[in-house]
Amino acid sequence: MKPLQSLRGMVDLLPGQTPFWQRIEATARDHFRRAAVEEIRTPLLEVTELFARGIGEATDVVGKEMYSFEDRGERHCTLRPEGTASVVRAAIQHGLVAQGPQRLWYGGPMFRYERPQAGRQRQFHQIGLEFLGHADPRSDVEAIAIAWDLLMDLGVGGLSLELNSLGSSDDRLRYRSDLVTWLEAHREDLDPDSQQRISTNPLRVLDSKNAQTQALLAGAPTLADALSDESRERFLRVRQGLEALAIPFRLNPRLVRGLDYYGHTAFEITSSQLGAQATVCGGGRYDGLVEQLGGPPTPAVGWALGMERLVLLLSQALQDESAEQRPTAAPDLYVVSRGVEGEAYAMRLARQCRHRPGEPLAVQVDLSGAGFDKQLKRARRSGARWALLLGDEEAANGTVRLMLLVAGGGGRRAEGGEIQMDRLLSETDFLALSIDQLDA
RNA sequence: GCGGGCGUCGCCAAGUGGUUAAGGCAGUGGCUUGUGGCGCCACCAUUCGGGGGUUCGAGUCCCCUCGCUCGCCCCA
Image 1 (tube, helix red, strand yellow):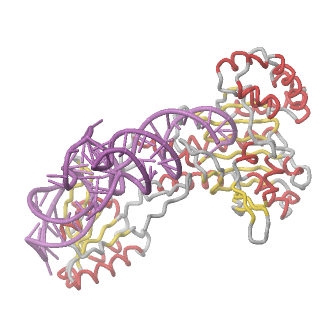
Image 2 (cartoon, rainbow, N blue to C red; image 1 turned 90 degrees about the vertical axis):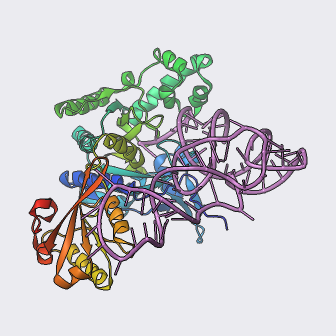
Image 3 (tube, rainbow, N blue to C red; image 1 turned 90 degrees about the horizontal axis):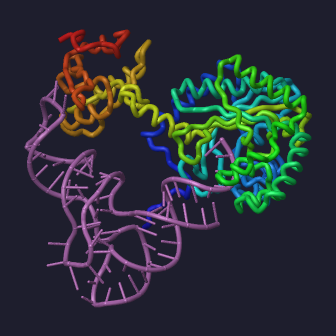
């Protein structure tokens, strides 16, 4: 029988990886809690129309990247390609926006049918933040600040924040026609992709990666010049807000978001260490979306960050750190036992250690029944600080032999001592014990 | 959707048309039911991602396909 495989672009996270994910998730949770942002969870599956209307029919995401199908009730369903549309839908459906401004975050898998490459999969994971009902430029600033602080706290270096204003929808409409006029006049000098985009999505020509096109664009009308006084003032206040918080940013007049719902503030946090898919976090303002999805007119701002890309950066950043600092799931205690009485004693003791008053220990019991040296070898490899050695003798007199497994000289060395069982269970600072504090 | 590179054991990896597919790590069992980063012994790919073809003979050449990977597109 042929072994089954996961679908293309669907990735398993093995135990060696999950500690990185847990660290990011825990840090994010903590930052959201401290910023009074509440969690919302929405279904992975939504009606297709939500994304078609929310993200935009003409976008690549909707046009060719969605996992869409009909369910048994002939409903048109889509595995969510992003989180914002669902959050907005849920907020409208449950009348959240009517109850005042919402500060929400979400996390979980998203699905886009794309060709996998570095930092891009078909099932990928995002953590996102959405502020609904805030129009003040300070809400843009705070949203960005939360993302920035979170990434800084994770110790991911080499990041830069790029910022732009897309203006109001009127600004963009006006600019769009100016730009199309200009692009048509220079059609011959553009790369084929960009020529194509004049009719499909002219703003995207701005962030073309073609060097010749980029050089040519120096003479094109800029979005900044097309902004109304009001939009300009708004953008200024966002920049001043970031400066006041000492968050460094770089203005990028070419920064254009791919989803239709963005306007005014648009930003990306990118890393130089990621290859082609360099954006770790992206977001901006989307004042029209709530209304477009059938809700009351509601200003909004938000962002999403890509977990896979962040994990990539985090594991790079931690490569230089010592093994001790890297996140692992190593137990505190590895229990080695032999003999009928000893093995029973081990099971009992392990359970008691896991429920120790004050300081429960993470305990792994060796269940192999192999010889002591084999079990000890595994104890060393488990990464545990201590090994407990239990046999019938210890079971009989209520002692345990304790072995310190310390790092050093390229491996883990063990030094032994003895400790009474009640002390093992009551010692308040067990994990900090050193070998000479043992009973024998 | 388009282009480049690559697929030999869980991981790393030799092999480039000739008979039985190196080796290392990990794993399992033993020497050894009782002690320390060991050591020794044994086991661990009827088969080289899959399918066709060329050939007396294919892991090695050709075609298709699947997958991985990097880039384009796009995006987080």
